[in-house]
Image 1 (cartoon, rainbow, N blue to C red):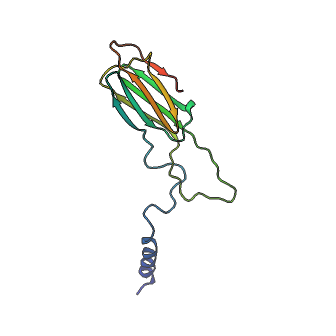
Image 2: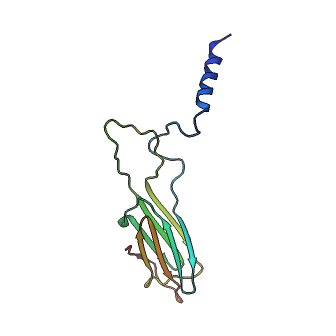
Length: 141
């Protein structure tokens, strides 16, 4: 009888107790890029959008409006804070560019649209427009 099958079964027993995915994965690169999660509400006069963008600087967020099409783009920057005697065991946070576009039922009045970023949440107030117009980028406050 060979020792090899017994050795494999011992390793199988040992690793079975670990939660799946606990072992170290590649340091940079997750299987799934981050997606901007958001809520959209409609009132009689405007659309209200709340988009989660945790860890993003206000200067790294761009919102573009073209008729009823809204595009949110952001860059999540990585700040390496690893000490000399540390080694990462797991990196799950996403770093890089994220964007999301969505179509609203009615064109947006870009002249009165506003954006505010606070505590990792981007709040857009997008008043409904009666006439069409050219696209515009919003300034984030």
